[in-house]
Length: 355
Image (cartoon, rainbow, N blue to C red; front, side, top):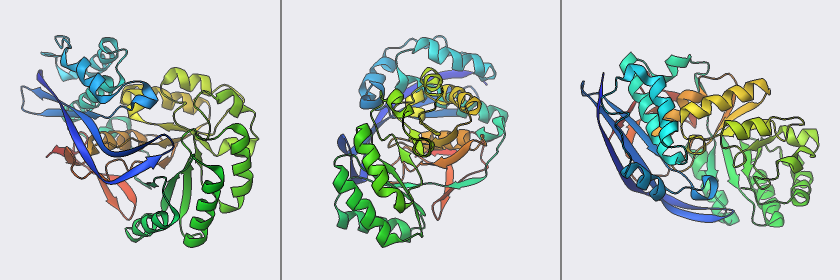
């Protein structure tokens, strides 16, 4: 199976439900689409949705890099040399995470199709299904309850609540939400780097009784050493997100005393599956649990993350709701969602089809 052509485009995807986090409000997202065509008419599909405020690159910047790139290293190559091609992605696009992610995912999809297997089968499937959290942005109490009710009626059992603008308001909102839902669901929170150490300690002490499942990136990304000084019970329930971008950052975080107990891996930070697998290896050596997160993304990259997540016994949490609120996606399929629980299909590759 020889790669004969590459197609690159950008899609603007509106959200059915705009949301607010600690540093911006979003009502639409852009995704890059990469399609690898072959002499067998099989295609490899990859997408990316880089976030400027996390990795320093926007969708337009990544698209500009791809649009002028020389792909002579890729066109005409056999997909059976998949591992070398994935290596070359990072060699040719060392500074463009958005380019890396879309190309790397497309190569993984094509290679699994070449082997006539679901992607997860290449690594071995360790997990069959997991419940995903679904995210509620920063909003008023009435809107929070209404959205939570909608998700519960749809079968979701885990809510992730965005916080980080005001500690007092955050505590009040969570307290009222827990009182309303009782103990029938789990609640995760994500302050998106919004707290200082003093604010976080105050928040933690005043919300211990609420039974929060985990706390995602409570303090700024560069505050890793400061987080190492937090009490052990607190650190074990922290999932680092913005602090964790690649293998090197994973190594730095994994030095003892550990600042967290959970790595939150996102393909849009790592530049695809190849680098994400390296982070998994660091997590294993450091006895970390894994959480898999996302931006607002097509089912293509969400499915890619789910395949890799289900290949690791370290995976305890998934937060892969990034395609749920897209008014229109680039593709369909990739996974099965039932009552908030995600599982993979048995189709080859990522199991996605272009719309």
